[in-house]
Length: 170
Image (cartoon, rainbow, N blue to C red):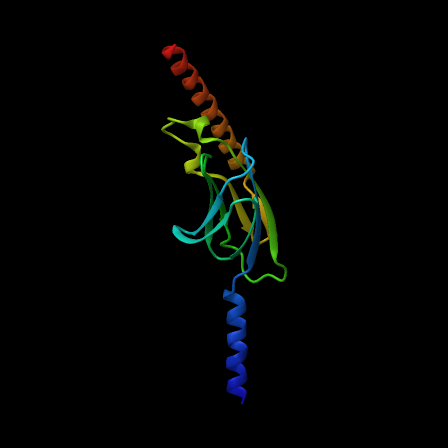
């Protein structure tokens, strides 16, 4: 009986050590200049496609992810720029509380960046990292600011190019 109890105790401790916590994410998607449209969020675990969330009218999506991995959420809607958000959950292990975050995402018209070779939407617009020491999700603000600056500059450059082409055609 004693070896059986020791085995059960060892399995229990091992499951605690290698178990994964969960992250609940609420995506709030806004389509700039469009009242409605089909929106899809593709979830990737590493580079592997995991699942899709789709909606034709609602813009609120809920998703649960397990800890111990890197995830990317790709937000897609017809005629809009694609945005990606990265979630580093490597440090997330068994937690007593479920971690929940709210991620607002605004999509702009693809026309704003038409013809641009380097598109900011090829990279995550922001990154969140779970910090095991604090037990909190943290947004990488410097990275998000640099990506938003890049997005703004790309849109400005596309706007100037569009005006040049329009002026030459007249």
